[in-house]
Length: 320
Image (cartoon, rainbow, N blue to C red):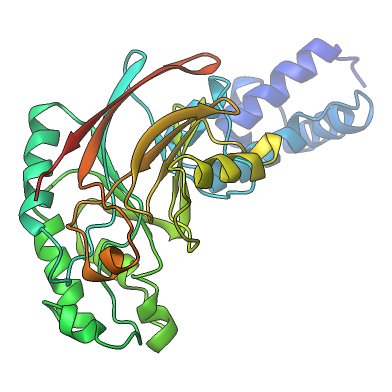
C-alpha cells in the first residue's frame, strides 16, 4: 500500500466534505475502496474530528437562521435560557426605535388616535422598529362595573379593533402580552396578542409578560410587563426587578409596562425605561389615587463591541 501523507489525506477529506465523494474520486483519481480507506485512516489514525465537526455544524445550521449564524460568527451571543430570540442587525453603532405600552384598546379610556399619532412621529423620526410591553387590549375582567368601561365588548371586537389600529404602523413591531390581555386566557384560553400578531403583516409575539430581542448579538433588549402593583416611588418597582436578575440573565436594556408610569434610570448596568401608557387615566386608577403618565418614548441606542455604550431616551407626553 502506497504511503500517503497526513496532509494529503486531510486535503482529500476536506474536498469530500465540501464537494462530495463523487467529485473527489474523479479529481484525485481514486477508487471507492481507496477513498473509504482514507476516511478510516483520517478518523482512526489521525484522531481528527472534521467529520464529527461537520455534523455538529449541520445541527447548528438547522437550529439558527442565517442572520443568527452571522451574529454568532462575529462573536455575538444568543440570550441565555432562550432558544429563539429575534436578532436585529444594523449598520453602524446607533439604532433608533419607538416604545409604547398599555394602549388598552377596547376601553372607553383608550386613545387609539394617540397610537396612530405616535406611529406618525415614529416614522418622521426614523424609528427602525417599535416595541409594545403589554396590555394592548383592555380585556374583560370580573371586576364589578368593568363592562361599562368597555368601548368594544368581547374577544373578537377587541382583537379586530387592535388589528385595525396597529396595522397602521406597517413596519416591524414586537409585542408581549400583559395582565389585561391575559384575562382572555384565564376566561377561555385565548391568547389575544399572539392572535393579533398572526394577523398583522410584520408583527412578532415574544411571549407572556416578558420577551427578549438581541441587538447584533451584543446586547439584550427585554420587554417586561408584570402583574404586581405600583410602588410609592416610580423607580422602586423596577429597581427590585433589576436586583432579581442573575448575572448571566441581565438585559442591557429593560422596557417595562403595566404601572402607567414613565421614567428612565440606570441600575446594575441596565438601562431601565418605564413606558408610561398610551391611554388616559381610568376611573379605577383615579379611585386608587394612581397617576397615569400618558405618552411614549423614542430611544436611541449605541451598540459597541462590549454592548450598550450609550442610551438616549426621549419622552413624548400627551395631555388629555
